Image (cartoon, rainbow, N blue to C red):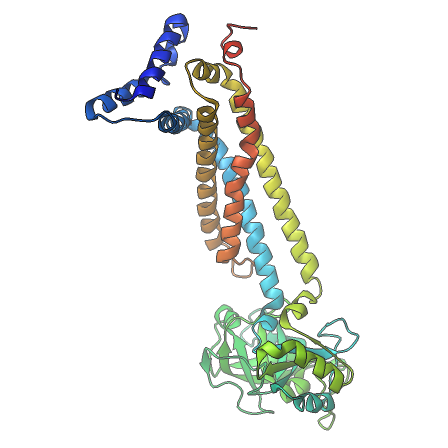
Length: 439
């Protein structure tokens, strides 16, 4: 017979409505069955009971959302707000991390060398020319570049607000000298040339050939130095400041220091960037360096990034905030759908009395939870995108594909996880007790 399970289901519905005519107004659950029966009869389509249950679960879930769209839209907006908060926390974590580590992460180097016993802190490390020469003699090393770090300020003669920058000294052509987007780069070891990152160029409307005025404290006096921009590189922030990259000798001359610079003194820098002939030999070369060069500590770039002051604590704090926000989302979703289930006890009891299985009831509840969660996450994601476009450029947020995908996946999971309580409650409903036939 065509639609045997469906016929039995419809007979059950008719018997139920005949016994309890006062519930016949609940025909929103029966009408789709009759329409489906007519379709199956006309087109000779046979449905199994499991298929029928899945169709009914989907219909009931979407039908209730449509009939109570105001309530469900309001709750979707709550999920949207949670989504916005989670995505912004993830973007803030990425932006702060990027502003802290960007220069180190983009170094064309396999190993970094610091002075020993400084806990891989670049600002505390001091290395000299003898250490540089000894490192270059170690077998397996392609190139060694000295790098110096300092903080300075750009001042503008047209009255614009001064900008704090990271002043970085490198040896031209060696690891540390960045790849360029435009320009010719550093043309000598002592020239007053500078490479700036693209963020600084865009924010201050600077270009090739422009002159920068660097303010530096020499002893107790303010000194000003002019640098010509000869190259623009990609974003290279260090310690939350845009970078200006100059030859190491120039850096040693203009960097802030306790006394006036002595041109005959040896240039002391902070770390060495090492490029290997074979990057796979990193651990072996690190051990060789430690044995052959005295007074140093060797680390890979990831270890050096984790040692940046405040980096690990900062990321742990933001990740904890994101975790608690997701936990709050689970509790909010669970509470809402539990209340929804308690309000629908008679309807769920009626469905069970006319033959609906626990599988159909659970599927309807889960589909409804998933649908509302997807709507909320979609609204929240679009809202976050719109808000991010309106934020000023100095706000340190960074949306990456991996972090956004992970956050959205977790947000889509909070609905089913939070709704498990309401599903369990729906499965425990006794049909006769729910409709008042049995106490």
